[in-house]
Amino acid sequence: MSEVFEGYERQYCELSANLSKKCTAAAALGGEQKKQKVSDIRAGLENAEDLIRKMDLEARSLQPNVKTMLLAKLREYKSDLNNLKSEVKRIASGNINPDARDQLLESGMADALTASTNQRSRLMMTTERLNQSSDRIRDSRRTMLETEELGVSILQDLHSQRQALLHANNTVSLLFTELHGVDDNIGKSKRILTAMSRRMNRNKWIIGIIIAVLIITIAAVLYFKRVK
Image 1 (cartoon, rainbow, N blue to C red):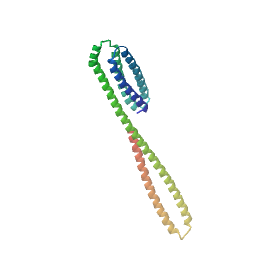
Image 2: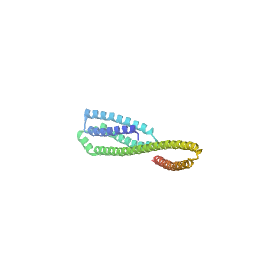
Image 3: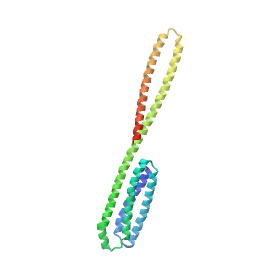
């Protein structure tokens, strides 16, 4: 998940919870205090709308699978923002006496605020779970990258060893040419060359097996990476 989106998301959740508290406080006020509180809430709603627009732009710039998940979350935030706007309208348009206002708070207003608070709580819990999933995905990607780097390092070491073996092979060939004309050391030379040839063949088999295992491992890692 995009870190930029997560930053906007945290800001929105904090702002939404703060606006909900202000709505509850404004419902119990009257006169100029109520107007000032409503004005403050509306300014907060503008900030919330700005954050949602930023989240929408960021989500649409990401890969399709991530974008779909983030846009689904964004629809929930938009619904939450619409609920807050409805609450503010009810509070701002309410021209009632204190007794009626208290009764409204105890009935419909209290239910609406409770529902909105519960919705925001669910949204925050969902966000937390998604953040944890994103952390696990990042850890898995980091592990796969480390495995790939290790595989590349091993292949480089094997290449160096192969060059060393080729150099040793050339050296043996030169040694064989020099000893070919010496009758007394023909038997000894043959034994030396035979032993070295066996070791080289054994090493080649070992290197071949290691390379095959590495290729299979890297292919498996890339396959599971694509599946995820």
